Length: 328
Image (cartoon, rainbow, N blue to C red; front, top):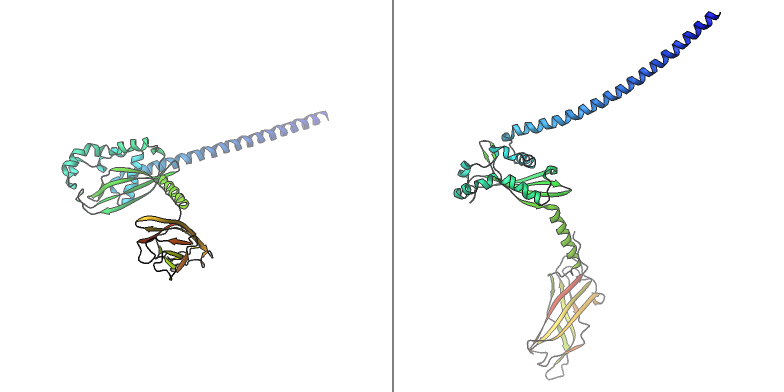
């Protein structure tokens, strides 16, 4: 009986030990599996990166077979920002390319500057705060030019657009040509901060919004007035009115203008007149509408030389009109 009990205890101990061993094995395998998955993910990332590099290298190998201006512009940009453009002499202007230029002597004289253009322009952009290594290509916009007084062959000029530090820029590429079915030639210049230009335009628009609206299409006619007919030589005018015509595309409900009278060539009277809807204007002055505005701020005016055929005249200067049309 004692032997049977000892045997059962031994069997149970073996079973527990065996169960623990299997659990540890499962845990180890699970950890190993996770590590393998991580290694596979890392390898996949490396494969993706290598494929991208291979694609880039293949592009460089067939750079002279690019057929469209857009592709050529993108190639120039990629090689330029990576500072490899000078490694491709087949893309650069050479001394024997003077046959394509009208002013051959000038071309031959400037050939070294032309060859160093990519390096010089790279430094110029860096000086102005461009981080070329992080420049992101956006688009290229080329136009075809016929032979002119500089290049005696049909050629391309245009702009390459890119983004850097959250701002949009562009630069100009001058005079690329097609030679034997392959693009060649470039001269980079005209770096432009497009974002800054947009910001300045918006600032100017905001400043314009603060300025008074003075449309040229508002026309004033000759002043009308009354005078005492019983006088031999009437010298006092009153009940002054002036015709106003709205030739804009917008309704007007408020207007400010300066009315002036001159006599013997000297300013005799100057008065700012304000009229608005139902106060000087019968209602809104609609597009194409004409209305006589009473100069209520002026009671009467004495004209020494006489109001009829006298040596006097009047003029009007528009100062502001409301409402101001919106930008849209």
